Length: 407
Image (cartoon, rainbow, N blue to C red; front, side, top):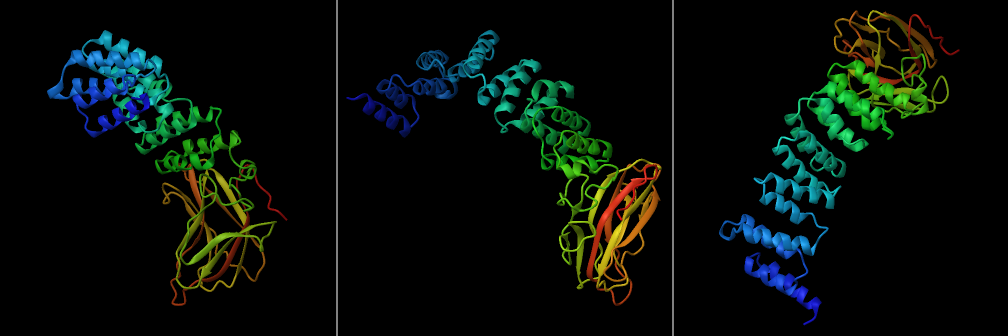
């Protein structure tokens, strides 16, 4: 009978029913296939009615001879000898040698080392797992935090110096409000060789802002600028504390740049036809259907407590129907009761660009402000707002370093 036919029959027999008799017959028909003795060893090790450690060990030795590069027999051998530490460790070292980068192998070895109390060695193997697949990431991170009280050791020994693994761990920490440790991970990312996109860092910046860590959030943003990972226009904001104050760049909706929240009864976007300085301005078109409370365009700005600042820019409007028009509001993000200031109504007399400015001083504890376009609902009966409103060449500058508006 041809060898290929024997292998076919062996496969058919073993697939019908996983039993000792079927696997034994399959192994006789195809004696060079290591999978059959490996399966027989598994049955003799774990199936109560068939349990026979001597047979299991013999089948594992045979599987190892038939497939000398396969780490599975050695992992099974280690599992059989958990109480015999020397044999188990020798078997695992062999599996490690045969599969130095295979995540499934190192997941098993890492768990064995952890059970033996060897945290550093466990982390070495778990690091290989994290480098090879994200499947086990959260489980491994949970294990690490239970096994070690040293976050720097976890970062150094467990987390590979590769961007996706570092970002995975960073967001794991951020989701659990371990902000200090997450910032340490970011420091490693920022010092690395791989480029980080604004979108990859965006949620982390937001997490830090929400958790009242504006300095750390701005540090992440500054690292993006320093490493050249932001566009040239954003990176060269210079003395103007507002990013993209002339609206010549796209609205990124992340970090310390402009953000636009979609509004049902207003369109907000960049206008390429009407502008003060080429080639864009910000436009808001009100539908005229509601007495809209509008605050859908904003930017976070890092400031110093107790510092004087000046906001200035140019506004233009057309056909604004209600008595309450658009304004600029500046407020402390975390405590508006400490600092919250509005410009005058920015409706203009005719379709002309009109300069405006507002001086203000931040509160004694203010470190992060929000600059946003707002429209407060009108208290009159004729309160449905329609028409268009434009902004251009908007700037925010500390008093000690005055900025001159464009002529």
